[in-house]
Image 1 (tube, each protein chain N blue to C red):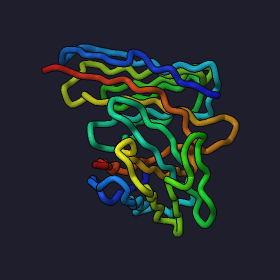
Image 2: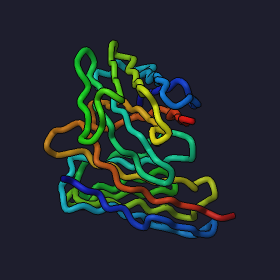
Image 3: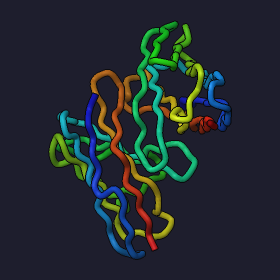
Image 4: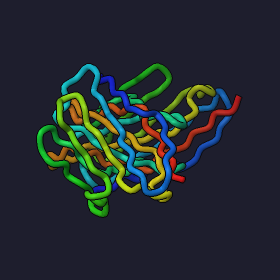
Length: 114
Length: 112
């Protein structure tokens, strides 16, 4: 498998500020990473596919300018929530994909916007 | 659009009971994964099934992929409180997209 870390594990911020979440693949070079958000008692919702060295591919309905994704290296992808608002509060999870379609997930980041 | 229907959505049982969770679709998947997620944590991979009709066992958990690769089931024997969690099935698109299609999950509670 692959070991994936996320930082921070939780963050509280004021409305209008920006928050950066890091996703690291610790033992695997990942050309592709995925970002999901999960609301309480719900399943995962794919936000975007992060591609190393190129622009991310966003799912329909996800604002590109609000959720900035940077995949500058094979082991690091970042998600920046810009001008965060309370409705952005959620559990954000990243994953890396191995060759066999299987994805390995990070531990998640709990974002609370006051 | 490919969809995965998971059932039941909620399941509360007593320790020692058996249970089955189902994951169904009208679409064919190249592979299907099962994950377990605990509150405040990311999903943890349990198994990947690839071949139609395939059966995989992981201790007390038995996973089956339908012959037509449209459905899958997870059977737990003699459930224990440690099995409590959200079980998610996810299918890989046969069209070659790297994205996974997730079911809505089954919230399992095993009471001691």
